Length: 462
Ligand SMILES: *Cc1c(COP(=O)(O)O)cnc(C)c1O
Image (cartoon, rainbow, N blue to C red; front, top):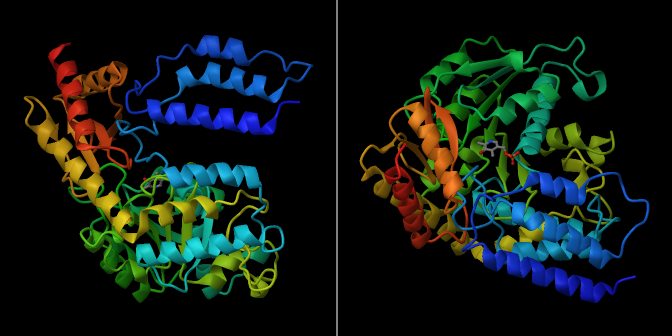
């Protein structure tokens, strides 16, 4: 048996060493995956091992193969790192090992989640009486929001979907922008609504849905159950759909509005960017990630619903939806608002991150990342042969290097060079490099150093 205290202390040291190395580490690893497979794989050993030995084996083998996505010069996938308090709270959460099912399984986990939910609604400018659930991310959150939508629009058509399922149910129309995130389609498949139910509406020059086309698509309906999905933050450009227009058009026809705000909804936390999500409070469900701009560790996403009854009816652990959320004593039961029963106590990290930042810190984080994105755009645009393809209104920058083939090769060489990491995307028919500034540790110096690396890669030809 190893000594637990020593084990945890040396693990904490290991984590601290790793985090401290992030500022200077290569971003993409030069990983020998065959070696990793050989060291960790093979048949399960019959004999176990001492915990300290196990962690040594794991860390020594894995660390060289880690992507430095928690570091300041990782600009892929719209993800953040983790704030110090959130990382610490994540360690505590593992140590406490609570089952955040309801007030009986862990009163503290349930209560802290309740507080975190209230802080989130306040920060995002969502109705204080909206229900919420902490899920693994936006994929899961959209599945929850759309399940609540499915419940309500079918209930209005006289159909109890939780009891009867979708066999023989009235058909549901789903209207969404053609630049919706791929997770929307998967949620619809999971919910049995099916990807074919989707009616795609064209988007404008910066990737926001065309509000007139959206209104027209809603208007052609004749009162059938309808769900409208809009986006706060296009994953490529950062563009926002017009939430005021979408909610007005949808609600005139009794449709439900779901907002995919995976990263963009955080704009609401900044007085300088809040106008981008004006009108959000009128929607019916919203989803936003914690592991993106809030800089929580994976995995944390938040779903909110203006119709707590529909939310609980679609998700509740018990079929008796009218009891839902009451839990033990007066504590709300987290599991009534998510698809899981036993689950990690994600409220602790959420509370810790918001407490560390405070409202001003959260606004500052959003504003800093957006300013850094603009800095990227300005400096890259000044380089010969480099173009910025989007209107940089948030934290996303799309960069072209001439033709698709050259862009693809430049992205690959930038990743291999190792100073920074940006991914590729196809947007409006072009291959582009996508830069997303979402990490709380990124500085102007990191942007400048990354631009210099890109300049070097371009100068090195081919
Ligand atoms: C990242 C993202 C998602 C998916 O979020 P996950 O947390 O990976 O499930 C959905 N929509 C948008 C706009 C995103 O940026």
